[in-house]
Image 1 (spheres, rainbow, N blue to C red):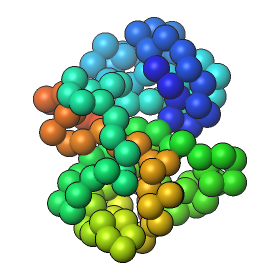
Image 2: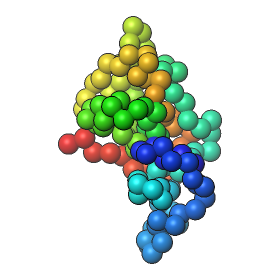
Image 3: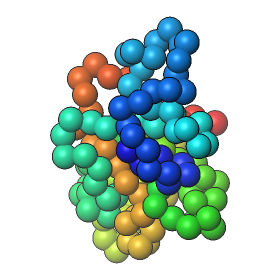
Image 4: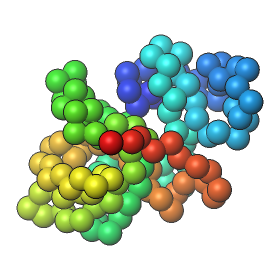
Amino acid sequence: MRCGMCGLTFPGGERTGCRGCPVAVVCGKVKCPSCGYENPASPRGRGEVRLSDLGPGSSGVVSRLDFGNKGLRKMLALGLLPGTRLSVRRRSPCCVLRAGNTELALDREVAQGIHVYLDEDLPEGQEVTVAHTD
């Protein structure tokens, strides 16, 4: 598994950071051993897709951000972080998406760095941690 926040690759099956947590068995999150971020567990479907590959009407949850330090800070400032639920409004001439009550227009290059789990690929009954943008 690759951490959506710091980019560290680690064995995804281990939930060592969740020891002692009463909901660790059913929470569906895997804690990164480096930064402590609680990553959503991989879905059973196609896996991650790039935001730039999604069409209008598609929706899902941000799984990771593939940017350098500067780009990562910009996405975090916009409220786009792993766990954020979003929907695609338009794809051309730029990617327009809705995340919470915010609509963002992103260049194709930026949209390629955002990886998403589609709603239809998420395990049934599994709650996904949604980042609050308030």
